[in-house]
Image (tube, rainbow, N blue to C red; front, side):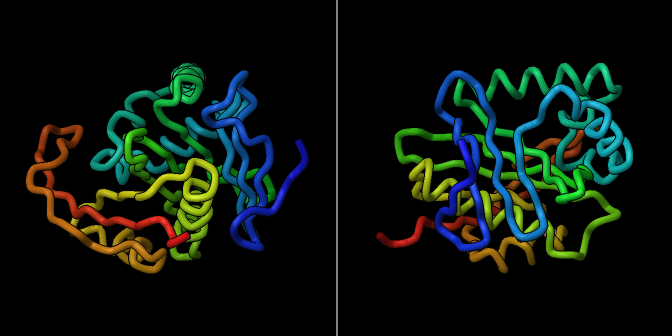
Length: 204
C-alpha cells in the first residue's frame, strides 16, 4: 500500500496493519521522523540505543532495558513485540530519522477496547533531546490513534520530576489530571509516584 495523508498535512501513513492480519507493520512519517514497528534487522541498533541510554531508562523502562541486554536479546524482544502487535496487546515503534538512525521509541499499550482508550510511553536518545523529536512523534501517533483506532482518550504517566516530559505532554495538548501515588516500581525496587496526563479525542 502506498503512503496516504491522514488527519494532519505533515503526517503520512503507510501499511496500516494494527488490528489487521497478517502482519505487515505500521509506519508513520512526519517532516523529520519515521515511526515504524521494529524488524529483525533493527536488533543491533535497538541494543546500542538501549545500552547508550541505559541509566536514564532504568527508572522508566526497566523491562525494556532488561530485555535488550545483547543483540540476541534484542532480536527476541522484537519477536515478542511483533507477537504482542499481532494479538492487539501493544504496538512498539522505533523513532527513526529519515537517514535511518534510530533515535527513540514510542509505544501504544494498556489498550482498553471497551472505551476505547490507550496509554503511550516514549523515550528519546540523550544525544537527540531538546530538538522537539519527542513531541513530533507523540503528536503523530496520537493523530493516528484518534483517526485509525478511534480511541477516545490517550494517557501518559510521567514522573513528577521529569520536567522535560511534562513540557512535551503540555505542548502536545495533554492535561494533567491526577497524581498517582506509589504507581510504579523501578529496577532497584523503589516506588515512584506518577502524574497522569490525558488527551481526549477531537470533537467530531
